[in-house]
Length: 106
Image (tube, rainbow, N blue to C red; front, side):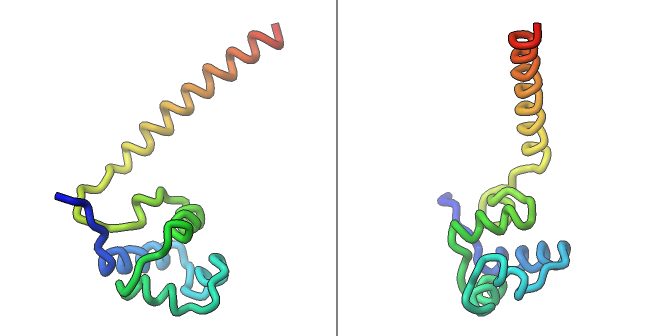
């Protein structure tokens, strides 16, 4: 099955995320530099979706991966997947830092 984003579910999901973070439609409009709040209301009502640039900015605002902001017909990626990736990168950075310390401090 071809993956498709559900605009209505995504809008409901975005509203829940905004409520959880205490962020208003006006806050999102100002953060993204939009001319009016109408675009944000269109997203929340399932009329349209944020552009990729706006999704990227929202992911930074909410401190969530872009993929977790949209709802579609494919299975969700478990949160543990992201923590496992972060752990792998953390361990890699520790080894890198240790190597640098050995090379330049010793």
